[in-house]
Length: 327
Length: 295
Image 1 (cartoon, one colour):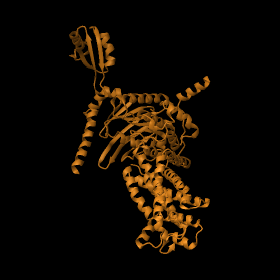
Image 2 (image 1 turned 30 degrees about the horizontal axis):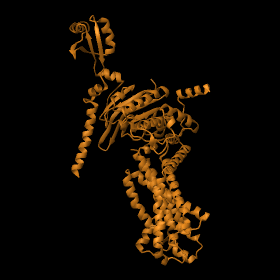
Image 3 (image 1 turned 60 degrees about the vertical axis):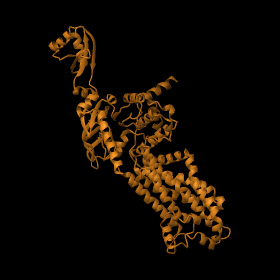
Image 4 (image 1 turned 45 degrees about the vertical axis):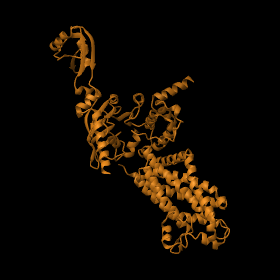
């Protein structure tokens, strides 16, 4: 295996008494799309800040593109592109002026600037709008411009911190089209954080992070497989006979649920062809339900991601209340 | 033509290799230049700000200057208008607000996230801070030049040598003030707080600088305070430049533009300007140190 492009060992970050990141370690391989999944306040943004050299770790180490994030800060910075959760554009400048500013700060050779700018702007569909002030852009356009800017200096790793937060569902999916398209065109590793389950599905591998710790790390498929079996539901000409046959031939406990013969089996999509070949009862319909990442999150943390965020919200509300009483 | 299209397509499908050079002085200079240019672009697109920050100096010069002239004329040598007397102070005032406001844009940039874009770039923080201070200094000096154009109304001659001297002094003042503002902006994270604090400091700086009255014959407490105000050391040379171009008797000159004295010793113009320059460099250094820190 080639050298990992992100390498994190025993990373800890404390803010006063609060331990935001509590000893995490992982590696990301070149070309991977790696996702950090977890509720708000789980330590995702803190980790990304450390990897982007914006914060120093309290202890532990991190290497990005082969360089240490503390000791080789500027080399790391030259090799990464960043798209933050909150917009970081100058809305009084045009799209092109924003990119030119970036190119000058990153030292993109002047001869390469215009062709490269055209390439990244066409990639996100903003070439025609480059002369407009960013203030006139929609939320989705701004995010696309930031992605283009993050790519301008051809980084080896692109960090996307909650790239679709605050966007409507349609814009979110179009952002994902651009990101997936980008992987086809550029030789790049993508590291992103999200608290949307459906977006984590786009990643090659996911780390689930909760309370500053990684609780699980694997491909979305493997994570779901680790949770449990797929649920298969079939209807046949004689359901009772089918249940008996499933017990005798496949050693599966099936029962009637929602008017269908229902049973759990590992990797349902591989089992269904066998079922068709071997079951003597004629099958009239079949459905396979995979465990979702929601199930995965729940099995590792004991709560759904929405519950986890509600807790954080409650805590903040409680603080506000206490503050008001204090006045 | 067909070939052209194919070329472009292939250009799009394969990523253009961008070779980012190692960090160095050239990269830093390029960063200074773009941060500086951004200030100019933003100032050009913000005409309202340019106009509003001229209101106050114009009020001081024409309303206060005219209104007080009858009263003040008793203490003035014959033929010298009070407006002429306060003109150098009004010039200093015209850059005061713009320079501090230019630094306030750092607080805005932090609020709107753009500061982060700058802070994560592979350039030294000093390049960013220097670019910002040069930008603020340039923009503020432009404002000063507008007031300079009104020289005739204050009976100040349009003399090239005088104007170049004054522009140079305004540039020095603006740079020092912007550096001061940037240093404050490194600490103060809310725009309201920044505005409140800087406003609170700007008016005393102005009133204690001798912009509106001569520095000699003041009560002891005020003498001390005026000597502690850095603005004093720029207003006095500017006034000296203006009055030495009016062709007035040296006795009158000594009354109106006595220069800054330390216990009777007249501080030479060079030292006076040197003090301002030194303060500018020191403030710049502190500002750079403050932006050097990471979380």
